[in-house]
Image (cartoon, rainbow, N blue to C red):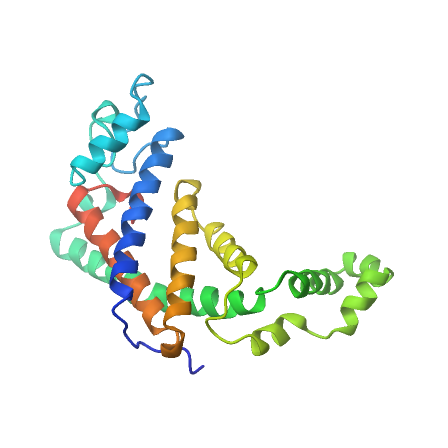
Length: 242
């Protein structure tokens, strides 16, 4: 695949940083709103009287503090990282950084911003493709085959493959961006869903702006975001973002 490369563009840096800040900030908001306890602290009851605006302003003034407000503070439970000998612990974290900053961006961007975005770029072909998927399923396919909709969809051939080959890398539609972002979102915890949508939209816009360089700039941006999340986790000892 010629689009799979590591070409760099300067836009990858600000996009990667913005996604990192948005991911943590939105995740923090959802953690607070839905009372999801931090992975680095014991489950405690939040103070229902603490207004969310105070929480957000406090974090914006001092972003280096713990993600959760003081009312959520509890005795820290030992993490897996704390129980390992120092050499093994840092080896584990080094391998984690390698996976987060290189391996994950490489495969996720190839899958999300190339395969899915191009295959699901337009609503009508996507709907036909979904009918074709149902057509190939046991039992359900027998029912679909008897309908006019199923017969028309079957006449088109494998439409997802056709769309992937037809639509060039970097071509965007609102439908394609949202579908690929939502599918990316479904692979994460509810706390991260808003961050996933932000991530999907910004990475797609970056892909459009740097489409002549293939997937390289988006892979760089994704790697920068994940590397910052790794560093942030070590700095704050808040493991929910790792």
